[in-house]
Image (tube, rainbow, N blue to C red; front, side):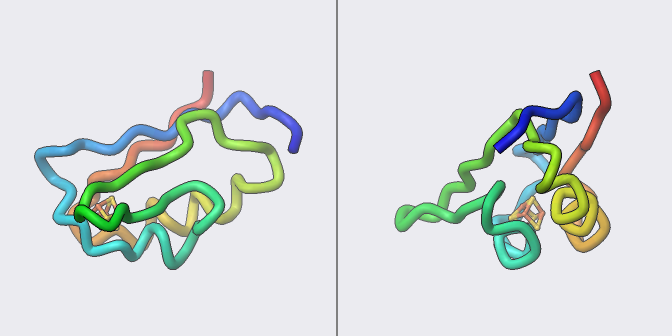
Length: 68
Ligand code: SF4
């Protein structure tokens, strides 16, 4: 996968571990068996649309996507 200039970060105080981001962008987000959220910080270029969909779908607006 090719690198892009986009970085994702999740505000742990806002995130409620609903996992909608993992449904929208499974290549970037994943819920762990213990209920935590793991995610890839550097967004591959081809995963950018999925990352943007995850940002839009997060009910607590916990996901930030920024261009470096
Ligand atoms: S959709 Fe938002 S609240 Fe839900 S797990 Fe992902 S970041 Fe957390």
